[in-house]
Image 1 (tube, rainbow, N blue to C red):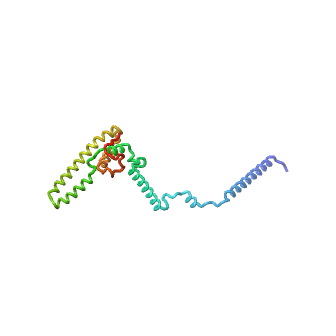
Image 2: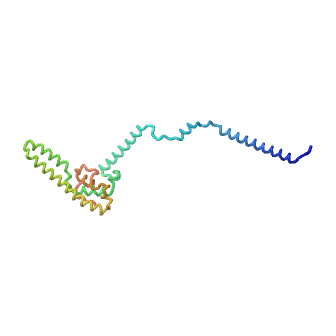
Image 3: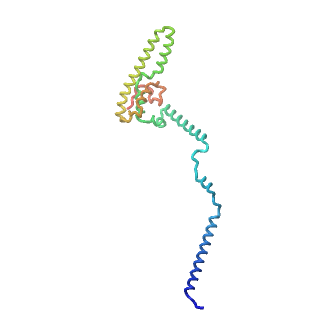
Length: 210
């Protein structure tokens, strides 16, 4: 029998490759056994764990809590306007030009301050006069219209002077249409002084803003 060194080399290579393959299978088997140490979660359970609910479970309770927070905020803002606490008033009432408008209107004697009282009084007098002296109802009606026209003229003059001061002090933004500063001043001028909210910072007329 002839000895061939090439055959010997091939056999050694086959044995080394077989040993490497066996070691790889052993390592993969051990790794697989380690991974399989706990049960694999189901796909449905994994998806449910990743998903978060878009809607709350108890909508009624959440809506009730939101309403309670809103009422608490509104009560706090109302109390701030009643006591004159500017920091806790609504954001719209904290605007510097609105503070100026309130102080200006409160310092001025407005003809429309007693609008509700005068109108109710004239109506009562008109009803009484209609039974005693019917012709007096026409006179009372004329007086009511005169009073209304006087209020309109007085508010127009008030806003004309106030608008100039607002532009000089705060710029055109204070009298822009979106700010509704004119309506804000008119509506405050028509309210009875003790009923105004936010509460006037001065108890008497004549204290003008700087």
